[in-house]
Length: 299
Length: 88
Image 1 (cartoon, rainbow over the protein chains, first blue to last red):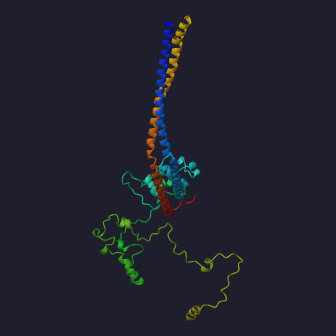
Image 2 (image 1 turned 90 degrees about the vertical axis):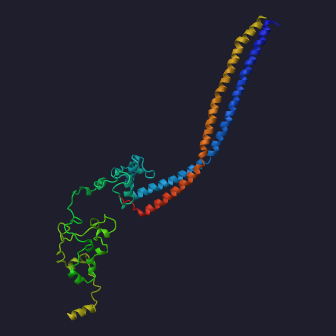
Image 3 (image 1 turned 30 degrees about the horizontal axis):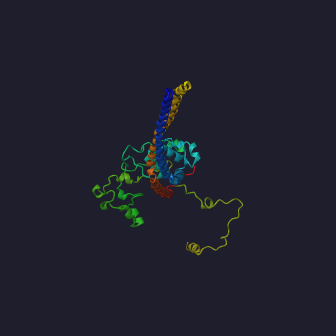
């Protein structure tokens, strides 16, 4: 065989070897790809199977949550009013009022009152939900919840109204309580006057009950010695209150006791009758009552 | 004879390199897909494993329903005991 034929055979063999090597390597790589895709497809199948009921469940959850949001928003606006409701929302979650309430499109355009600047969260909730709810002076686990000295004025200043224009210090009421100039035992003074002997004689024995008090001191009345009272030192006479026993008028002008002396029932009483109206004479023809006749005859 | 040698040279210098180049390109592409497929398979498996908690949505669904019912009852009570806001 000539040398050129040998070289040709060698070249062909080399080409075939290259083909075999690369093609076999490619087949191996494709088999790995197939195996990997099979695993991926199996996992994707699991994903599809597991997520199949999610849509219905999530829709049901959202429907229930929507109902809850609608309920709470409606209740808040119904009880607090839209403006105060936005103030409450902004107080609890600063900046949330800008988003507004979902069912009240106008709420996003309102300027919420600055309720949170006066009350903290807990007090805010109590004060709004329970108009008469007791507001603690001191938080059990933190600072003072409410400014007991200026809180009322601050809250009032949130709402422009004429009451703010009044003088800061009005005339004081008559002094009552423990610092009152005249002290009376609480069991003898629960309001009104203490009946004396003349008044008891005039009104009868029942008035003595008022003189003795509702609970006499010896039976544990509020002016009994402290050792007979319950262990509640705050309920002293300053908390129970007392009357002033003073004739000073409560108003600046006092009571005009002669205001009714000149009253005339025939001219001042009865309805306003228009001029020219026919008088009501339906009882004019009736005879006088027998009791009136008897009184006249007797006098 | 001369043509034979020319053919040998062409086979060794032109055909063999071209064949090798093309086959190597196919092999490199196939080998480059393998890691990607493995990562896809791992991600799908992890995703499937993460979705094992999906049945808990049924519990969440029930709890949400109960909670909304309680809120509705509470709101109804508040509606009764708390005054409505005064009209401006």
